[in-house]
Length: 375
Image (cartoon, rainbow, N blue to C red):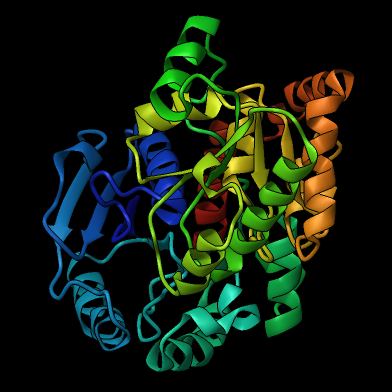
């Protein structure tokens, strides 16, 4: 069998949500099925680290698809031409984008429909592209893979897709997310927070991640608590960050907030595992990967009570209304003042994290490919 894959989110040192899913799934299914061949379609120079095994052939297709006009060109012409040339048995797209003109059975991974619920972060042309094409991608796909049951339900609701056409394959933490010893914690705390315990946020900084409420809640926490806890915000500035910057400048305790920017994966693993608690309260998530990364590190979690986050967190987190500064502040106070609560959440996460396993998800994706061909 020959499997073609859209791998344009496999980018060196920039594996965020879609790229991380692509890496973890593809590295497993290529190695687990050496009897089959895989063609990876990149839109930029190929990095050798993504050629996971001898049964992978990498092809660079022009142009780099980073704008709606180039999305259109890449999938309408470049991908179509490549599919005609190589004649794969199935086409897997880990970012949900498909070629609408091919007869090759296609499987699309939908991570979320955030562009419907939070369109303000998109350009005019991005909105037009997503709203026009994604309903068509959903209908074109032989199988759809959603990263949570919440996302599956959202796809069904928005696009009237048959529930039996959609499979669920959860995200999971990378293998490096594990608890660390006390010496490592002290070293990391000295490096970032002058030896203090810290709350942590991990993710890109953009409007739907709700950084403003997090900053305000932390400021209120500091006004109420005598603790020396700090707030570490890890991630790149994405878009529309003016409100975040304005909120930060107006904080009373802004000197207790540290922005690290993007850090390496190895460093992130240690920084997460050395934290006191993850506070992750977006307005919307299709999954919420930092939640399971914190769980894997035995770090308690405060997260939002909406969209996919209750599904992922289960009973192993404090759930709060992400619109409420007071609820988030009170959750932070509770976890600082009540050690038994913190230990209970950590124990809950140890039980919960077994739900999220890349091997299991990879096997689910593989079965979706087989079903797409057989149907």
